[in-house]
Image (cartoon, rainbow, N blue to C red):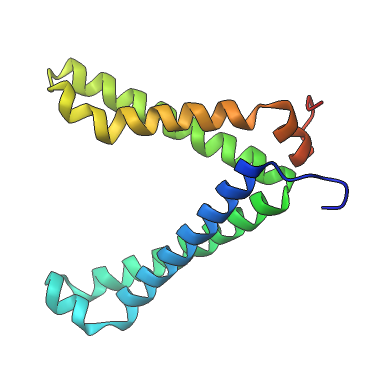
Length: 141
């Protein structure tokens, strides 16, 4: 990262992603190694194992993405753009489906409109010239 100045929000996004990975890994470990969860949730042990294994995979992938964002790896920019674009599209699709179904807009606001706005803002930020330069993506100034 010599010569590259990390934008503050990029650092924050990287740190939040790393913290999310740690949380996912902790939940996965709890799912695999805690008999208490089986008693509390009354779930089949095999299902809990799958949650744990899937959680470990998701946690490690999230950790790698967080480190990549923190370090400014070019691939991290592309991954973030794709994931946030899918999030925005998913939120839009959910809003449209709920609206066509006649759902009360109060039901739609928190779970879909807020993430939609956050996703759009992060996508906008990722396309800022200084951020693109930090990640080494073409078109940065």
